[in-house]
Length: 491
Image (cartoon, rainbow, N blue to C red; front, side, top):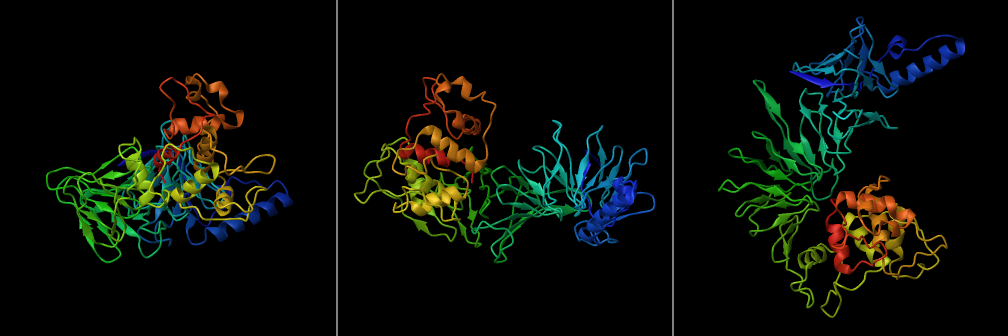
């Protein structure tokens, strides 16, 4: 099998010639020698340049001279692979990467792949996007690019994924793709590498090309045919037939039903449970949710009656308010209240059409994204405000800055453009190409400081305009509009 690629990332003992260095003066030589020493220290025992110019990478086990070594061959004209200070290697034009299982990655025209010290190859995408190296030596994967893992199997990670020096892939959702093809769902605590990790195993057969789990932009994992899921308590799940289970980022397994219906992922990343299907919870417990239930990326099962099932299998009864029956946002309001992102009032009302304040909005946003880091930031009008800590959290996490006069205006109703900026700041989606915004009749009314942010939320579908083709940047958000807007954002 030949994979087309362009850039490689490796580590290991290297030579001055492989770096393309020259020795024009004693000072230059000394500087280059120090650089080589530094690189050797970082890539010790992981990479070596052989007599014919081949660079040998240790691969998944981190040890040279074992069965999983990855070989990076020189270019057609003998060009040596380029090695940076982190041990990442750029594949020369005409060069090849040879894996232990026989997979070969070659250059495509003048594009270049990067090989990490762990032996994973990050290729450019078909739009000319090349992989780039971060300050810590990890490698950014261009959107749509293929990564060939050190085991020789390939995958296309979701947008904004990063390959670390050991060859593992970290996705924006927190799900990790290991160099051996195993995918790790963080489980209820949202962190990889802890006791509640759920492992999704690939299908490996020496006589058949391997199939590894695929991960989407929300962190949902599709179990490959022949693969299996391993839970911390020892429970294992395998599929029967060709319909495939889906594993959510928090480790829930949604199985197909016995009628051939398979789980479906909606536009917000929630997994719809087929009628009669089982859901295996992260603790290994098996339940059969009501028809119409969905499993969210936040680690809860939302039932049609508004109740919510927790990771442990307990179901909290639906919240009943006197003023949301048949409201257009009823189901989302119930979901947010059950998840404790927002509260109702003591008189049994929710007041969905009341305007929401800036303080209330940042509190819901913090709760929804699970933000807790604080830095002690206090504005001139928040020192004694009930939301003082929530506002501090929002500032600390780069969501909002306040006003030039040193105030936050916590009790002011939040405008649509202000909410757009907060969301855009957190998700980092601002876009200066205002093609979406300019389709609205009132685009000129959007404040200069909010234009790129409004464009970002429009591009992502988090907010939309009104039937009269206006966006209404200065209009205030209601409580219902706030929860529905946030519900559209994948965490």
